[in-house]
Image (tube, rainbow, N blue to C red; front, side, top):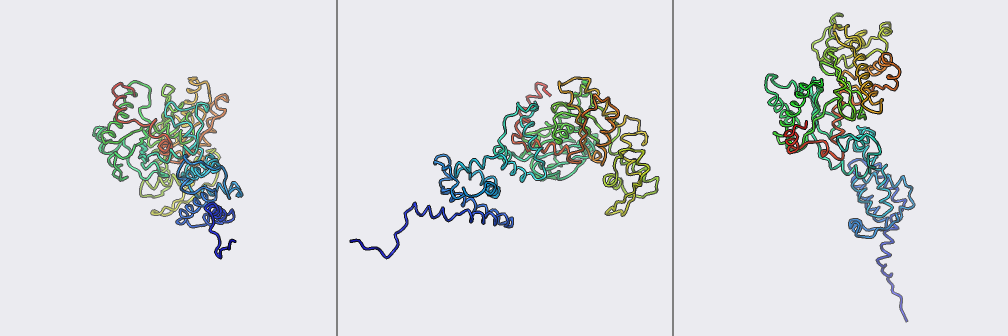
Length: 512
């Protein structure tokens, strides 16, 4: 005869695990999900940790097994999470963050399938780079990841896994970016949203009578000092202004000397890896293009540069207008002086140009309109301009208004387009029909639309059909953002940068 014990029978180990799993109900997990979404940012890491534990328990897999990796057999079921909608599961993964989402893929095959979905990692990329369009990241990883020669045909590009792309991008070292403009340069960290400071350009830095090598060393040392970083700690990316435009032997030699001077100076400062690319190409990349015509309205001149597959086509011809941002600012000053509008500095005039000026779609029609507008300067008070607002930018299309004897912008661009068409460099005769503007003055409202209109009127329909003029995609910092695209590639710095050893090899065999 057996007597029943007054105490309940202790549950078996299996029963304990089943009870644990049943405690993690879909209702409880959904409640915790809502709490995680609504919790203040400081508490979200803790909530994410709780959610990760819930995933491990509800999927019938203990944390120790999840950490064990592939050695343990993985169940395929989501456990209690089977009852939850897929969008809720995806939201859980988003809250966990990239690292914990990857760990969750070890819990079971169903979680691994959810984690490997490209849409999840595209979302993580958007969160990581909120100020960088998704299209520009995809363009860079598709066309620029292997360096030169640039990938042009989609079939040449291997299928990309966004999870592995995200993982590789997270491991890319930061780089110093220096955009050496024609008037002033912009510098900053590749992981920043925008440049962190400005300086005089290295072409005019310090005593211009000093040797180029000494000026460059002083320039780079100053930038590193301002950024408070050591040269030996990270790669550097330098954008070079278009100079020595011709395809002559002397111009080639001058460009090579400048590039060699930049590399040699930086390697003497113990920089581990260096990349130097011209501004025109970087502006094109920032617009999501590898071929087209890049127009840079610089400080003293405007360059019109044809680029095919990332290479400047100097044999086709780089057109140059002897009119730049400085001339527009000076012309606005003259117009203001004629109306007895007083100001204290040229910097004030430049601010008024940026805040009030625009380019008229039809100059003659604009003269008949009331275009008066006012800007409140923080130091010098109120300024009111009328016709000066559109007359300033008009000298790009009518240079003689400012007493400048040079081709107009649309004439110079049309000439470049005709040369590209006649050269027949590529089976695709549309490569030169994308025109990208860059430079601070290129941000004048209405400029892109007016230029496109003038080009269509100047060129024959067979050539002008399909022409598209693109405004500076990132404003005055467009070339800097082109460099940022490259320095954040999942393959950077490998295919883009030179080490000291490779630089010496190229110099020895004259491979520039």
